[in-house]
Image (cartoon, rainbow, N blue to C red; front, side, top):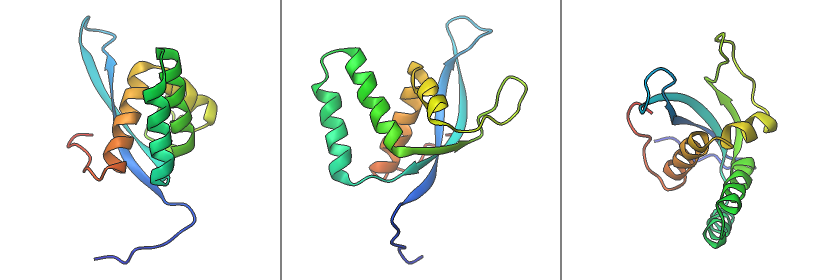
Amino acid sequence: MTKFVMTDKHLYWWPVTVRVPDPDNAGTFVEQSFEMQFEAQPREVLLACQERHAAATTDRERIEADKEQMRMCCRSWRGIVDERGADVPFSAERLDGLVGLPWGRAGIMTALAEANFGQEAKRGN
C-alpha cells in the first residue's frame, strides 16, 4: 500500500467517455474517450454545487451550475484531437465549448461522480 501524500492540490487523471451522435449512422451513437485531469474539491464545495444544481428551476440554470463545477474541478485533458488528429490543448474556453455540448457535459459529470464517490472507472471508459 502506498502512503497518503498530503498536498495543497490533489490532482488526478480520470477517464471520460462521451457518447456522441454518430455522424454517419442516423439514430446511433459512437463512444469517444479521453482523460481529464481533475482537482479534488472539499466535500462541502461539492455539496454546494449539488444544491445549486438541485435548486435550479430551468435547464439554463442547471447547465450553468454544471459549468461552474467543471471550471472548479477540470484542470487539463489528454487524448482530445482535432479533425486532423493533432492534440487540442486545454483551455478554459475550450472546456466551456465541450461542456456546452450535452454529451460533453454528461460524460464529464459522470466521470466526476465516479471519482468523487469512490467508484472505479467503467471498463472501456
